[in-house]
Length: 119
Image (cartoon, rainbow, N blue to C red; front, side):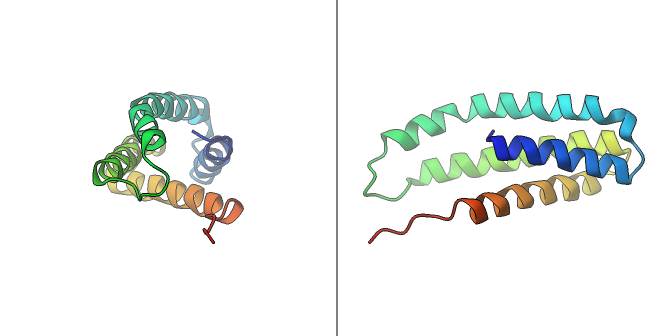
């Protein structure tokens, strides 16, 4: 989890809970999101090691891409479950909220840290 991801998680969860008048659940929601984020981060360490061992001249391997995709989908599913209970809504709504948070984080990361193009 990056510092930006953490800041967005804190701000986004507060905003969503405030809009839906569930601010009493903020600490519990934030703890659940941070805890599961840490566990998923640990689960992703082998992928980080594999990416570091890959040669820089080649693109990522199919296994690495599949692993990152599975971890991303798993993370969104876990966040959706947390938001579902925090907001007392259906799973689909929780999935929408988790997807919006993920899109926000990725968009901010792409904007603040654009990919370096090789010359």
